Image 1: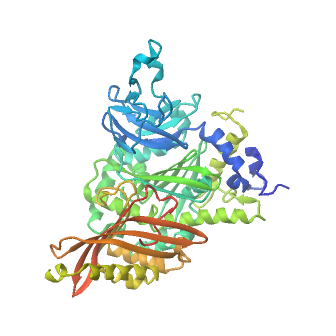
Image 2 (image 1 turned 180 degrees about the horizontal axis):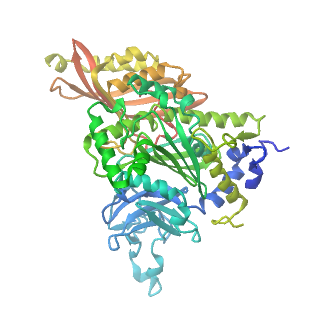
Amino acid sequence: MTLITDHRARTGSQLVNEDAAARRFRVHRSAMTSPAVFEAELEKVFAHSWLYVGHESEIPQPGDYVRRPVGGRPVFMVRGVKSGQVNVFHNTCTHRGAVVCRRDRGNAKVFQCFYHAWSFDSEGTLVGVPGRDAYGEDLDMASLGLAHVARSQSYRGFVFASFDPDVPDLVDYLAGAREYLDLVIDEADGNLQIISGTQEYGMQANWKLLVENSIDGYHAASTHDTYFKYLVSLGTDLSVGVSGVTRDLGNGHAVLEYLAPWGRPIAKWEPLFGAQAEGEIAALRARLAAEHGEERARRMCDLNRNMLIYPNLIINDIMAVTVRTFMPTSATAMTVTAWEAAPRDELPEVRQRRLDSFLTFLGPGGFATPDDIEALESCQQGFASGGVEWNDISRGMGRSPQATDEEQMRAFWRRWRDQLDGAGPDGAR
Amino acid sequence: MSALAALTRAEVEDFLYREAELLDAWELDDWLQLYTADARYVIPCTGDPGGDPSRDLVLIDDNRLRLQARVERLNSRKAHREYPHSNTRHLVTNVRLGAAGDGELPVRASFTVWRFRGGRETSYVGGYEYRLVLDSGALKIRSKRVVLDMTALRPASDVAIIL
């Protein structure tokens, strides 16, 4: 019998136990507590997946840049002045290593390392070395440009990077998640924008607990009672409940698509939005129906989507749209970065409703997210108690998965299992 | 107007200390009475101290309705992050009065808020920007903007308590 205090690295198959006949799916709790598993994840998951870097709308002008860690490594994303393309660089001077981009965002034609003043342009080319004559003819400027991350690609504005040169192309990697990304982007008439302002927080819990929580329809009613009470106090009808489906989108991606009591800026009215908004929202909906047809417009307007893009990007199109990524700093802690996305050309009053709607539920000051943090930290504390080795993720295995089931989590865990077992990006061993 | 302009720093400090005392005692219903009916309570994101809640993503943008809801939430047993409540200590210092005008007195102050719960301690450091008014003769808060000095809510995790 394995013990939860046994921190030997195990294979994915030893940590994720699926018994289809018994309709039982279990995850060993050491997957959330073991430093050895954490080390294995850095190598097998984060070094071989596509990881979210940022959105092109954050760097619209040539020379615009943002700096942030991706997969725990400091990188920066800059729009090249000559090419107009998005470059994602390792944030390190090719001379002796200091970071060359030292602000979180801005605009620059040149990134100069302050240590010995080597300078690089926005395409990464080394353009300045003080006292170059000391090297004679031997300094190969062309080979000393900033290092691009192994792969970087953008899907309709969402920029991803991978540290694995052999990772499949992003569109193939996204698999079934493309359809849902398209819905979110098309709602915004193809012109989605990240709103200025970044919520940076963290919690003392394993990162995979936030994967589960971000796409969990089962916990909403019990954990978020105070949010629902707030909605009710404003006249929202809760009787619709949370109803819908969950789907495995391939490659570890998954979605929960459902009806819920709250309103949506695009485009489901609720009392919270105020009576004057009712007509505007009806007009928005009619416009989407004219453009995309009734069925697709109904999905866009009425249905909420909580989507995981494996391994650590969440795009939740709910009472507002949040883009959230997170990264473990140990087996028992993570950092979280969250943004809000919105149509670029939204009317100010619609934008205000969206901002209000976001903050009421989401983020470290919202009426819901702090209680999620509490739940995940509470799970982590519970694991430390021992006595119970496995988490149960079986809900809904015996039926067509519904919104309060756990099939979407199983999709994540199966891919995670395969990666920890050492499978390649296409699933091949 | 003249009454606002005549307020001394000691009087304003007393008022701010009273607010801190009510928050630390979790007397949130009484705390809310310090705020006007058109009050705003705003916390911009760390790293974006100028964040404008009408345009940008912030951490908290409460009008009176949401402030009321926040108090009801924190008074309930279902605000899991704050049930049981943290022990907090709001320290308010460096109080500076601006020039009264348009019926408002702008006040700046520095703060440290300590939060202890479940064996963990976290702290928040930053500046308060108040706009105070006289409402039926009583000093009240029309606006409180909390600008955090931390570069991220780590290790603080959240702003589930009122700062």
